[in-house]
Length: 84
Image 1 (cartoon, rainbow, N blue to C red):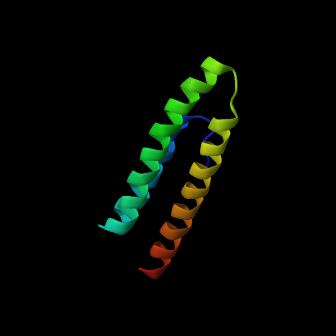
Image 2: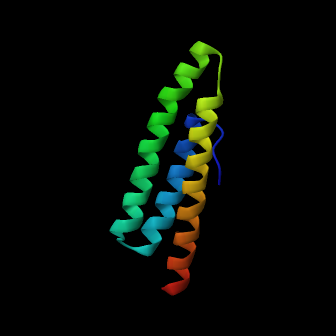
Image 3: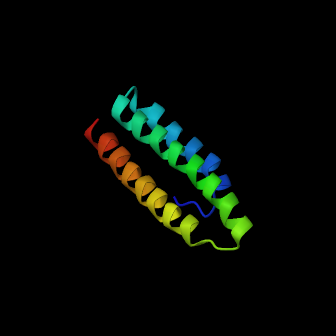
């Protein structure tokens, strides 16, 4: 799963939350999901500034970091499911 803009996060967040609920309560993975949500909030602010200045390089840097974090969380969820 990847996002292209901050508004794509809602779908990805829902899917990750469903996977987390299947595992049961895991505070570490929940914290990771919350941290990614915070990163997306910051991305949204940067996207607004990027549209104002007509320069999107800062938004692209945030987007790359967020997509890496999503990928890492997905891998951890997969490992947790396999270990159950």
